[in-house]
Amino acid sequence: MGALNIKDADVAAKARKLAELTGKSITQAVSEALDQSLKAAHRLSEADRELRRRKTDEIVKRFQASLPPHAPSVEEIMEDMYDENGLPRLAVDSSAILAVLFREPEADPVIAALTGATAAIISTGNVLELQLVVSDSRSKTDWGPVEALLELHLVEASPFNDRQLAFARDAAVRYGKGWPRLNFGDCFAYALAKSENISLLCTGSDFAATDVAVA
Image 1 (cartoon, rainbow, N blue to C red):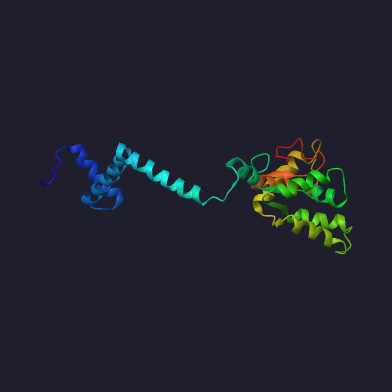
Image 2 (cartoon, rainbow, N blue to C red; image 1 turned 120 degrees about the vertical axis):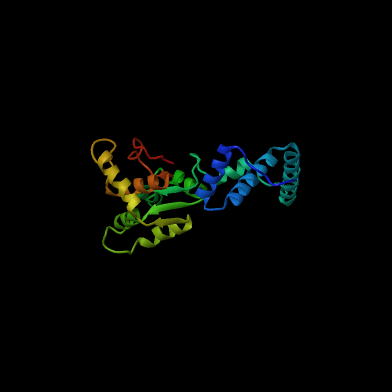
């Protein structure tokens, strides 16, 4: 086949514009554009679709063969990964930990939520709040059980950052007076849950009328 001679002025102008925008020669720019178009056309061909179907079947067979006997279903796996709101992690408020430590009526549901979560985090602000409540702000004498409980349920402390500060300030303005009313510690828990877009494990009704998802 002889050399390609583009006689259409509009097509030639487009080729020059493409070369200018990409910083390439006209030949290279047109060649790459044609390669992309050919790949797209090839993907649409029936033969290519059939080939991809066969390869998909092969991949699925290899995967199925690697599964152990009585492997859980997709639904069971997804249920284990996410909480009831479809969220993968929990933010934990001080009230939830205190409910367990002081054997309040909500203790069992809190424990169930913690054991069922794939991961849980607590604001460093709420960690300090816990220490103040448990040790009555005087010493770390009674801190051991709190630390053991957090470690047992893999509850990690999440540092308070600028993003959380923005949510905490918003909470103070919106919920600092009237009902619902969030106190200083509540604002830390609210900010963590909102900044991470996860549900909040808590007790009581302080967060019920806010816009945070309660676990």
